[in-house]
Length: 218
Image (cartoon, rainbow, N blue to C red):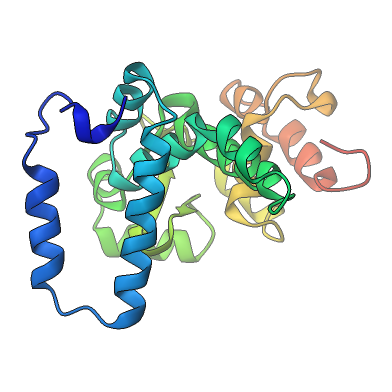
């Protein structure tokens, strides 16, 4: 089923037409025009590979960025089959994006800085300072800013022990840090570092964090 032939809930059929008019009314340079044209062609192409259920699931994402990402992941099998010869690394790239999307959705998902500020009772500027100091985990989303995992927040503020573990993981990028917290760790008896941290065993998690990235370590 194509997006052009079905309107999803709360999406009037004339929205696409209005969007195209808005794009045409904007002063685009040649690069912008080429980019938008190719993206629209790609989206239309993907829509033909997705059934109504897949389109609905993608459209239910909380942001436009995640709508596109979900659609790409839903259509990955047909995309890989179509471009297997000229894009040998495409499957690996798609799997990497799928892993990132999973990190965004696990353990309650993520929230923007404004919501973190509300939960912690501090200003957004203070949230940004904590992120820059490595005291809060924030997953970069390009121009869309940062996504803050909900699981690092507790009723009393930040999850106890989080800052110390993040300090131990400071040489890893935020996505690798999130992966550490959420994946079962053999050094912790197969439990996730997040679960062990919630139990209050900060030292065990710190030891696992110190070994993170070593040959054979989780």
